[in-house]
Amino acid sequence: MNNRLADLRNQIAFATEGDDTALMEHGISSIDSTTRLAQKQFNRWLDLEEAERTPSRLIEMLGFDYFTLLDLLTLARSRKHIEKYYGTAETGRFPDRLKPINIKADVDRAGEFRSIREINLEIRRLNLAAYAPLRYVLSHKQEAYDKKYSTEIRGGEGFFRQVDREESLIHLLRVNVLKRMESAVPSFALTVERQLGDVEATLARIEAHAEEVEEIEIEDVDIDDPAFESLLVGRKVKVLLKDVDLIRWKQDLIEDRNRLATLVAAARQVNAARDAKLIALREVIEHKCRNPINPGNRKVLVFTAFADTAEYLYAQLAPWAKSTLSVEAALMTGAGRNRTTLSGLHKDHASILTAFAPRSKERPEDLAGEGELDLLIATDCISEGQNLQDCDWLINYDIHWNPVRIIQRFGRIDRIGSPNERIQLVNFWPNMELEEYINLEQRVSGRMVLLDISATGEENLIEQQSGNQMNDLEYRRKQLLKLQDAVIDLEDLSTGCPSPI
Image 1 (cartoon, rainbow, N blue to C red):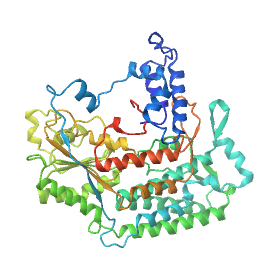
Image 2 (tube, rainbow, N blue to C red):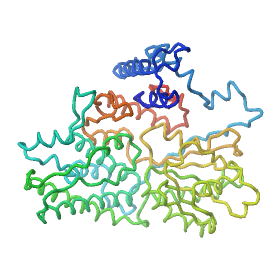
Image 3 (tube, one colour):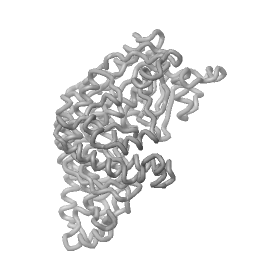
Image 4 (cartoon, rainbow, N blue to C red):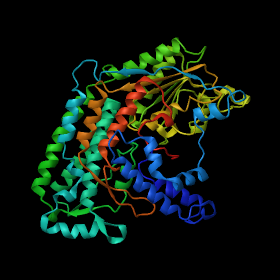
């Protein structure tokens, strides 16, 4: 499920203490050479026509050594694998998966807020000039800044220019704003407000005739995208104002300020009473609690990609759930901002998860007096490695671009030995055709060149994070369409790369 094998190579290096010949006795003369060859073959596979780009063809191209390596160091324990080879007589059965419920909610109940299409156009028009000071460096000064801030790659064979890093980051910031718009208008408003503040701060420095401007610290990057991590690594850029085209920079900053201020004003009009998506979520939760699919089970797990969205949902739903449904709620974001309506309950991860899934977490009887949570709102900080099968309903409030993440989320409740006969997945989708929404991301991101900064420091410059963006978009489109009709397992993902990562 990962387009680059550097992550796998690094994990193996950790396990083998960096000894490239650690598996020599098992037929692998060089771990590094084996993974590098597999990467080349995978890149070749990506470039094949769609009809030829099948899992079986990939397995054939990757070769024997790569799968020997995987057999030596990985374990696969999928649902199908367990049912086929182990049986469930002693361990208990897997719950039945009901067909996913798909909801396409409007943005504004009053119908006054602009559509996602129109907002996307505004996002594409943003210069985001506050985050790209090197864009405005005078031509005769550019060489000096290149020498100071460029990153040497591949042992000096090439350089990754800081100005390219800035432009790539801006493309990702545009995508981030679009995804927050799809997630929740208040989350979108907070992001745009912060960007407006950055623009005004930069203009203030220019107006004050400061000697230099330092690159702005970007906070809104909690989108789950490893590309952000690599682009945020590096030295802080400082630009002397005497070295930049101040007239052009100010023009672009003022244009950004006007557009952002307009977006903020519009977004702030959509309060909770007008938030059609929030209202739809409340209706889903109430219906579930009043009509449980398993006797007496009122537990609901709500996932969102953004901490801002999670906090908004908790603020709007927790008091309502307690007063209307007698349901206790909690918030988990992984950022030290956990909350709960259960008085006296500690707000650490373990305490909240144990109160939400006391059976799965094997809570001792003497702690039963702490009470029980039935509504948990969380980010992907708990999407992996947690047994929460006390719950039988999982809601994706925003759809993650990576289909694997959706499957991982559902895996919190789709577990062997579940006390539930059946489990339900609910997906909230943008109120438009999926193909069109994926194309919005393609248009808003533009063409990017990103540097993959791995632990080896030897990766090539890569385009679009993987070999072929169109293949990637097509892959995501197909898998997300599948998820509208059924819950699928990792091994069911078509045209993907089998990987233990």
